[in-house]
Every structure is written in structure tokens, then in C-alpha cells.
Length: 196
Image 1 (cartoon, rainbow, N blue to C red):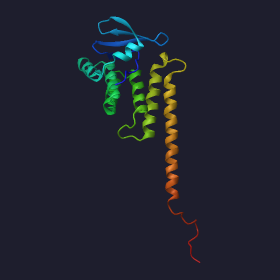
Image 2 (cartoon, rainbow, N blue to C red):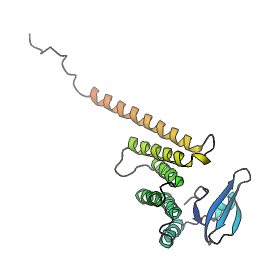
Image 3 (cartoon, rainbow, N blue to C red):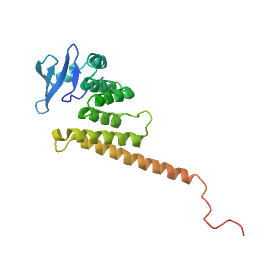
Image 4 (cartoon, one colour):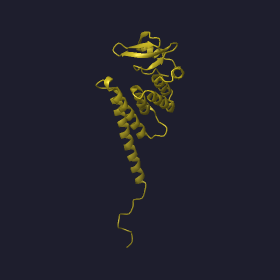
């Protein structure tokens, strides 16, 4: 499994290590500041992040929700671990559990938006519904996280991507409808019966 993108406030476990939270990311220096559960703070290079990521993330996240069932961040991390394994219904359930525990947990809404944007299919939804759901979750994220968003936030790019996907799908549906109509006989014009 590829290393997940580190997000401030999310909890992770690296190979052979303890649970920790990402507390700061410095893209200019390529470093990530992490804080372990015991309070110890450490800086990690981006390369170390990539090389040390453990494929046992799902098991670690499951264990965290067992140890701390009322901790919304643990459920959010479990959702991310399931998403990494392409287990979308389980991912959605875990993210939603995080929002039930903390209705103001912006990151869980962001992750739900990413889930609906990236998943090939979500059970019981067509593509347009799936992308509209992603937009709704991104808007909820923006509403809750407005104080910490940067002027040009990446979430705006994701919303634009979803809207483009909706437009593309609507055009595809329209083309299919036109093709189906071409294959059917044309109805007789109104008022003409064909008799002489």
C-alpha cells in the first residue's frame, strides 16, 4: 500500500512504531513533525515517511478504535486505512462514525469527500449522485474548517474536479439518449394519419 498523505491532526502508525499524530508539515523543508501518544515530539523527513509506512495500517487503526471507541480521530484513521485497501463501504462507515462522535470534525468530512470523489463506485449511487455527494462533503468541510483554510485551498480543486465529472457524465447520458432516439422510428407528425 502506498504511504497516505500526512494530514495535520490525523493519527498514524509507522512500521515498528507507536501511534502518533501529525502536528505540523513543512513542505519547503520536506519535513513532518509528529507527536507520539506519550507526548514525545519528533521531526521526520518526507522520504522517511514514504519508506517507513507499514502495510499494517488497517490493523493498527482497528486496534485504535477498540482502545478508544469514542475518539473520532481513530475512526477517521480507520476510514483512511479502509480507503487505502479499496474497502469503500467500510471506509464510509468509519468516517461517518467519526462525524457522529464529533459533528464538527472537518477532516472527516474532507475524507468523505475524497472517498466519494476517488472511488470508482459507491454502492447504491450513480456517478452524478456520487460526485454531488463529494461536493456536499467538501462544502461541509469548508464550512467547518473555514478559519484554517488558505486562500487557494486544494479542496476547491477537488470541487472543480467533481463538477467537471458531473458535466462530462451529463453529456454522456445526453449522447446515449440521442443515440437511442436515432435507433427508433420517427413518430408521425401530429395531425397526419397517413390515410388518403
